[in-house]
Amino acid sequence: MKEVEIAAGLDSLDGRTDPRLLTLKVNEVYLSIQGESTWAGLRCAFVRLTACDLRCTYCDTAYAFYDGVKRTLGDLFDEVIALDSPLVEITGGEPLLQKNILPLMRMFCDAGRTVLIETSGAHDIGRIDPRVHRIMDLKTPSSGESARNLFANIPHLTQRDEVKFVIGSREDYEWARARILEHQLARRCGAVLFSPVFGRIEPVRIVEWMLADKVEARFQLQMHKFIWDPAAKGV
Image (cartoon, rainbow, N blue to C red; front, side):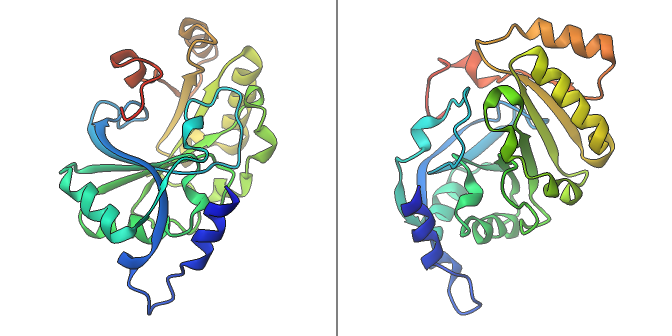
């Protein structure tokens, strides 16, 4: 992960550098349907970047921690545009670890694409192009990484953005419900999402709790894990 951070630091957008020449370390690029969020079910081109500085207990993309290829933004942009999808998601790993993702997202926005970024919420989202829809994953206690949540990100959220809580236990649920109330998330952002840890908790439990408490959140399942093998990559 340090190699990715150092490599990203060597490339800077200073007004003189052609953004197409900047580089990112990329794990995979693929076309699928969006499996989560309010965009679920739509055709989507995914760019998965390498590296993450968190180690959530339920992580399902550990293969992106280290594996990847250094690519120029121009090459990456051309490949994604050729997939001919109006929706593009930037994910990881943790995509905000590599600062050159910022000009790439601007390039996609300028090309008329709807751009989503899925981020852990442990890194500053304030510099992201305001045209991008930010899906911020606030880490619940069972993730083992809730101390890394950067709550200074909350004021940056707008109605274009979504906040996701991955729920693996009653403790996680109560913690998430408290954060929704504390930060008035249901009014601050476009959607609040509750997603069960796949295989760890029965979805019906979370739904029952939400109904009993009238929680202002949207329940979701990871659609792609029901269409393909849950361990499949590139879907």
